[in-house]
Structures are given as C-alpha cells and as structure tokens.
Image 1: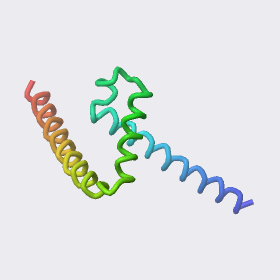
Image 2 (image 1 turned 120 degrees about the horizontal axis):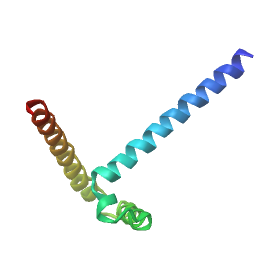
Image 3 (image 1 turned 180 degrees about the vertical axis):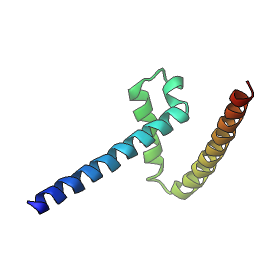
Image 4 (image 1 turned 45 degrees about the vertical axis):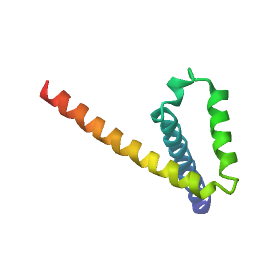
Length: 93
C-alpha cells in the first residue's frame, strides 16, 4: 500500500514539473513577442520553432546557439530592467 502511494506521489511530482516546464516555455514564446507578432497563429509559431530546430541540425549549430543565447540573455536583462522601472514608477505614483 505504501509503495502505491509513493508511486502516485512520484507521478504527481513529475507531472507538476512537466506542467511548470510547459508554462515557462509558453511564457518565453509570449515574452519574445511571437504571440502578438503572429496574431496568435499557432501554425506560424510552430513553423518558426521548426525552422530553428532545423538550423540546430546543421553545421551552424554552435554559431546559432551562441547568437541566440546572447540575444536571450540581453532580452532577459532588458525585461528585468523594464520590470524594475515599472515597479519603481508604480511605487512613485
């Protein structure tokens, strides 16, 4: 009986981790502006992601990863600065 409970708990933890991962990945799609820029066209968004995956299968993989990593880090930094500025503006008003 205890093993069954443990297995169910383990399954629930894995499911929650997977759900969190999917939510975070969806958030990145939104943060990148893809939802707004594509009019929430899921086929276009998937096409963009498929195109990126295809590029990662080429000899340009490392160059693409380096470029995209830099851009992503800059976007995270800019977002943090913008959110900090927004919070500061809200606190002042």
